[in-house]
View 1 (cartoon, rainbow, N blue to C red):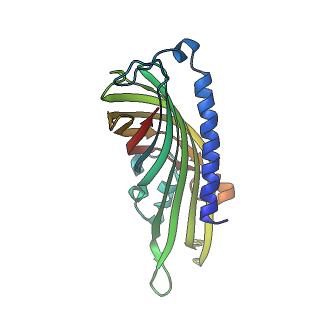
View 2: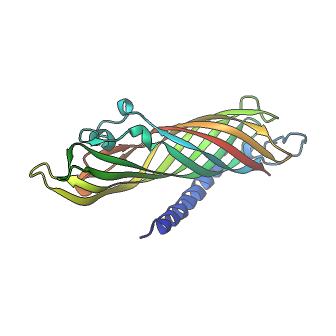
View 3: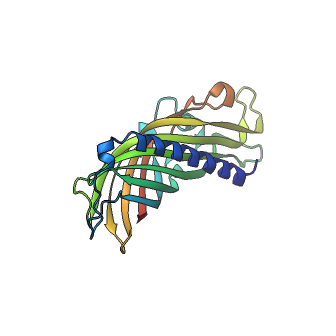
Length: 256
């Protein structure tokens, strides 16, 4: 299966999850809240505030000392040389926001992150003295549903804080040369694991008007989530993969 087809399949799944999460969020809104007036800057129309947008930023994974017990990356550091910090990488996402009055809004988002990190064995080399190399690759497609509180209400500047739940579709692989420590032989192989993990998300940010129907801003969010690598099947050395960390992004929305 090609990388392009895998990405398309991930996006189709993400859109399906996002649609389901949106329906749940809307159905859970009390009837009185749905009838509240959302004031758009410069007008007083009784209109439900909505916005669609995109975010561009970066993911910063948790460091070695704060990762989950049994994390595969920490376990790999016993024999491989690489930096966990090298897994920081670019992210992109789309989101839909629905106002629940002047001080609350619900949102759903779907994003994409992927990063490959090279590694070599710490003490072993090939017979010709060259390094024994591998590529460690992590891909995550996060889908989250959140509720946000706007302490200053809707206006020209809109700070907000929020929390919610995320579903993180992940895929992790180690591909390259490996050493059999029983007899010292060097062989090529690939170890793969994937799954969907769930965890809490907290966030904060601020938005500024840009034109008559757009806003730009910045957002920081933190996710706490762990995946199960199923080592009996994947043959990976760790039984978990810690997907937690920080996201920082620039946001752009169109209001309607």
